[in-house]
Amino acid sequence: NLFVADFSGNKIYKIAPDGTKSTFATGLSFPAGLAADSAGNLFVADSGSGKIFKFAPDGTRSDFATGLGRPFGIALEAGGSLVVADNEEGATVRYSATGARTLIFKSDFNTPQFLAVEPAVHQLLNISTRGLVMSGDDVLIAGFFVGGTGPVGTRVVVRALGPSLTPLGVGN
View 1 (cartoon, rainbow, N blue to C red):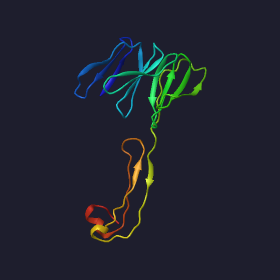
View 2: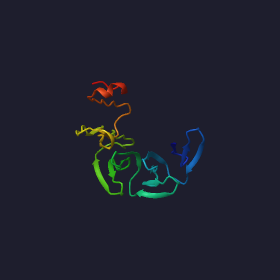
View 3: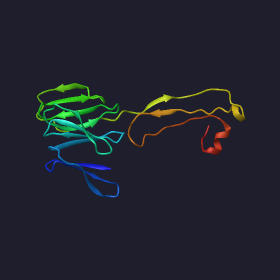
């Protein structure tokens, strides 16, 4: 789904993959930045009220953060924290998944509005396994994992030894 903030209309629209447009939320006060997490929650920077609202997948609204000057840009970090550009305060703050606030920095920025967080790079978690390979129930299956949220299209190279891998398209 695509969510669109109608800043002056004080609404959030939801556009389904088939192009169907519906009103997702009303009664807002100049909604600006939007961010969605992997659980399907939608965070809305409501700049007129100085709040960050959290909408559950069923549309239920709750206050996630209050007391901001004029939140505009928001972005989710890989660990689940929400970063907010507070336009009125000239500050950038981080909220943990539980809502704990940390000031990242405050400066003489002239009304920060938008921000982005770089995705975490992939991380190699396990590279090799060694063991006695036999037959039947004593067959060893080995592999490795690559984790992270790096850019789409990242390549993984697998090298293996063994004559029985050639029919599978894996060379020695």
